Image 1 (cartoon, rainbow, N blue to C red):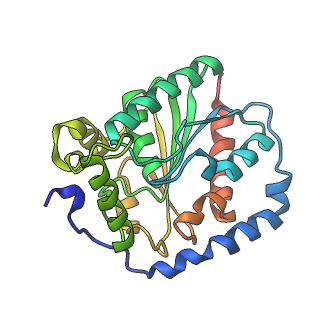
Image 2: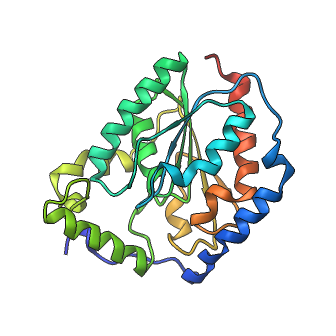
Length: 252
């Protein structure tokens, strides 16, 4: 069985913890710092990358908060993040180039789950375009350190890709030549010019938190579900700190 489809270490916590999403969103919407965040005049642009099987709309709450803070936001252009990683990161790099050119400065990349993996490779390949990378629950050390339900979804998508359905990864992505460069770059050290932050939760019910501990990144632990990282108040505090620090040195 190719590595892409082979079982791997599953998270230690039960999947039912992901039902916290609604509560996390409700807490965020009630937070005055979310509704009316302090607005800064010097903010870098932010490019958002959604997670596996999700689209740009899944990060709309985060995008709205960023705009209220004064950041220009851009979407990755994904309706359904399930494509071959090399094809997906190639399109992301093209989008990154346009955003950086429009802003005349380097970009902040924020990716959730698989989106963080794609963002990491895009940042490694384009350090002149990326100032800061933030990965939310992204198992970059081992992308298949996931629970059985997610592994089943990966297998289903791979079967569709093997049948020729467009926009789907395939079994070959696990150990074939199509994603060989992506797999290598995902494990490569990030250049010093790119600041990286990995946000993880030990109560993540989708991925193993240990797989999120990128050695090239600052590690920040939060109490959050996996799917709720884009609507969790603790995550937003981390993002506010990172973006404020980035804004202080941004020259765009």
